[in-house]
Image (cartoon, rainbow over all chains, first blue to last red; front, top):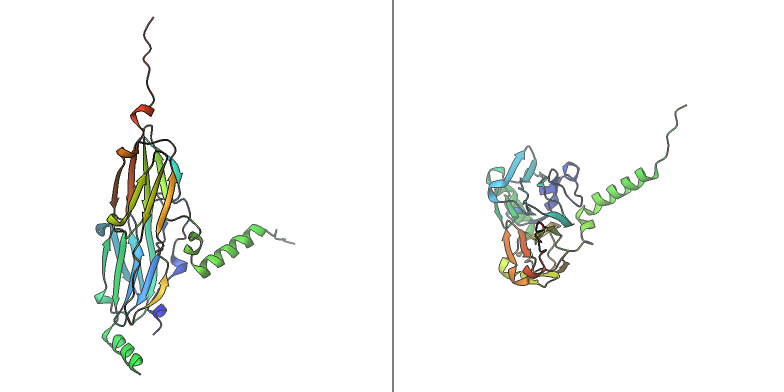
Length: 133
Length: 140
């Protein structure tokens, strides 16, 4: 199975990133995706996002990850260097029918979101058969 | 007859957008220094912030000099087990070694750093002896 068909970014639906970012914009996080025999793993950088501020939703075959960021306020200061802006994060991915939607789980630690997308038993065993053959 | 004016910038924008889509927007980011840093300047204090998600704060080495701050760290990449394969790899796993110049001299002893939700924030203070001295004008 090609992992890209299992979980592929939907570039057209994603917000493009620009520098500097502004507080009102939504930005597209960098992601790593890797394919394991029993699941697809998605790792996304969402700096500034805590576990309570992340939202993962499934609509038909589209998985959307979103993170809300509360920009830090430094009273009485002005920007001297602005290499990045601060805003919310959002990105969508096409999910294949081989993913068991009821078993998706996610964790957030130190601004990194990890989503495990388990393959259905049928898809996982098919993968094993291909490997053994 | 209706005529259209050729706008070369539109063509360039379209080319940029096509190439971005081909390689991913982050391809352009790789030429930038990592991590990106913001510095906010107050009258007597500076706040330096950097987005470095997934870092073990104990592995972060921060050196504060009067005119600059140096950040060093190894960001632990995701290591695949047997039977696993990448289908997309965008997150940077390069080691960090970055020096940022400051807008005014600071007291290195006064630096305070915190790492929260993948964001590093360092507060730096202007040395007491460099702070502007307000002079009271006495009535003559």
